[in-house]
Image 1 (tube, rainbow, N blue to C red):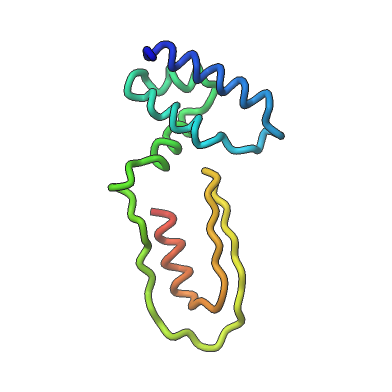
Image 2 (cartoon, rainbow, N blue to C red; image 1 turned 90 degrees about the vertical axis):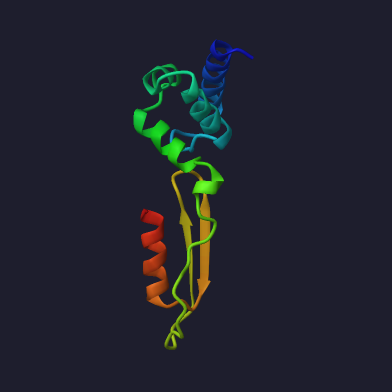
Length: 121
């Protein structure tokens, strides 16, 4: 499929998704994000954002979140320590990209601090 056809097809896919989603807060599906990022090889970000009616910040965020796996660490090394007696807890984190993470049990605060630092980087 030629590049102009890909852009036109993606515009149609975005319009279809927007007309069928349940509310404005529904995150853009990963498949649409991946296709938009892939078009950066052929078009400027302003051309893509204009055609898809998305912000420049969105395409940058998608590009960063879809970076190649060899550049993204699979694991975050957390400190190992024997925590004092604490109450178990459950935490569920939901990220803007649609990913989720759950933590439960007794965890030392230094582990949570390390995890937050890793998420910010």
